[in-house]
Length: 131
Image 1 (cartoon, rainbow, N blue to C red):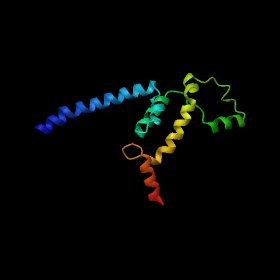
Image 2 (cartoon, rainbow, N blue to C red):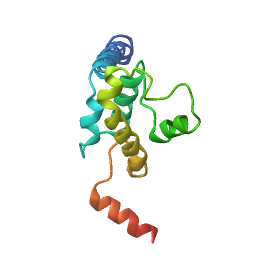
Image 3 (spheres, rainbow, N blue to C red):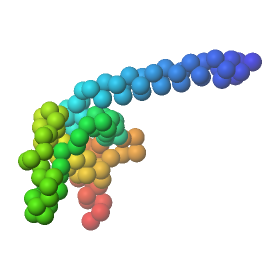
Image 4 (spheres, rainbow, N blue to C red):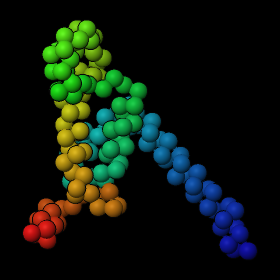
């Protein structure tokens, strides 16, 4: 009977709390660029930072990568990046956007299964083991 009570009452209530927290995080991440401070935090959860970044940029115009901008200029494309009217978020966060993309790819090899990043000592040890 105790197991039934747990699975019938307690477990669904706990899941709804987790779901409510996820929805609250999504709303917060959508309006606040916390991914900027997350990438500078050594104790960040990599997956959480990537999620915050993706949620923030989900309904915004993403800045063109530097290579894309140069390609558009070289091809004399009518969608020249300077001629377009960029959004405020586009202009405000363009450098941080590029920095995050670099951070995301650079840190990926150092992500533990739980999302935490290897410490400097753990990275050195991992490097020694590869030799």
